[in-house]
Length: 235
Image (cartoon, rainbow, N blue to C red; front, side, top):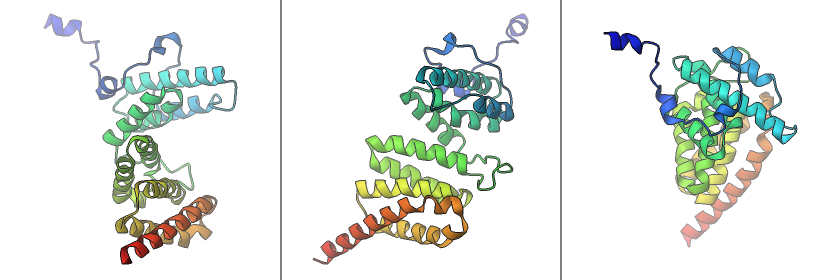
């Protein structure tokens, strides 16, 4: 009983702390304490995250990373805080650890729904979709097929919860992966269905319309490659 009381103040490591180690520079920076999703947003917006002297940007992002790491450790039960931190922490992470952060979100919070009350063009699946896309892009460097599988699984499970402009980014990356890995009839069919659907709504959705030129270029390449594939099959 006395032993239990002695350790009552010692909080066991949560899943995040076991999966994501503290970087070597962690104890060299001081960082403010944050405990809510709103405080995460305010801290993120309080400093420049790019387009400034590299040393200053790196310091700002490491401070943010440490604040978020500590917040996740202390408030792992707060899913909104955890996912928002994991999404934004990559700015202060080393390259290999970014992939670990992306994977942690995708594997532990695949059904997370981000808030949309302060964003007219957002959908509840956007955050997870964008993190999944970041993970798929990184995995695609080593395995095109793995990157494709990651994106297709996302689309199969959550496409109707993803805003059109984020879908445009996803299909742009998926189209490039299809072309690099090789087209199949199934991939051509998926692409054509998505392209036709997005083309039909772009005039009424400005964020999608502004990104559609990239899809048009890829559609041209896929159509040409699909036609060549058809000719070769007939021969």
